Length: 328
Image (tube, rainbow, N blue to C red; front, side, top):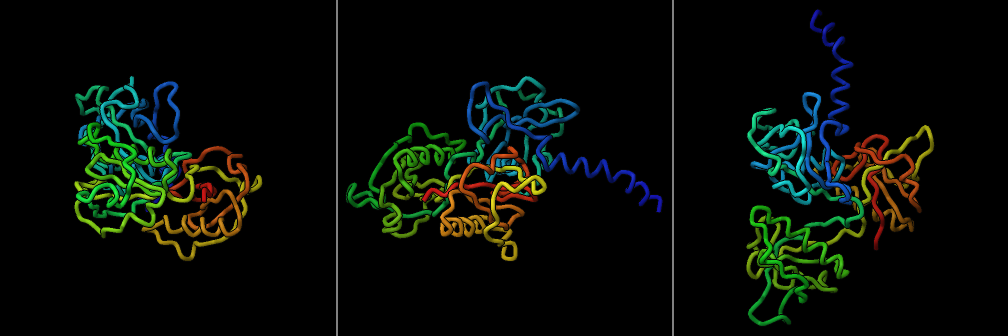
């Protein structure tokens, strides 16, 4: 009985702590002055009344994934090291972070312990999340290519960027971002990464990428020699997580409710369903709220109440819309 009374007395503070953890108030992304872009920056955590950075020792994609999801984004594009987004000025709080990938917060991951590091700010860790305005990149898979018979035999005919001399072997997945930016600039909907740093694409890649069959020589999301790891752009743009306030007037209109058929391991299926429904209805914007409700709109009214962090893996939680724009 005494234990229950103590628990009841502590409940408000426990709920407060959980609310802060969920809202991302103990983890933030900091960018250098003048740098634009939502979802990129140096990772900082709040401890003992002070913001401080994270050392990049053993910092990897899983750690970045936890941070990005905690901040309300779909996923991480890649992790960054060596103070790519500038050096912090407070303490370096932790190092040797080891996330499994299913934690709700970076602070739930194993690490060295607060203040137990000799790391300098030159090793500050950062992340690049799938952020506002960037088309979502979807993995298609690993496919063989034929090089010996020349360019006409290629599955993807246009070598639009050769960045083999700039491959970051410690963060090879950063090549995905580089190739995606080039493919998007070319207007390609599909692209492939071959020989670790060659970016290939074409206007008809969706019909040709698998002409030589599936392959096995791909690593960490990039193709090896004579292999393409193929990606496609989703037919929508990611516009991020936004507040909704039902008491003050909804920002979008409910079109469909997919809550009864949510695949919790593949929430992107719900996004795809909502996209198809929005496109059929002729709508420009669509959003997922409450994990499975499909909301739509014709303008940017979804911005009315500002940004939210109450989203998870590309869908909104209660009273939050994860918004997308129909592109084609």
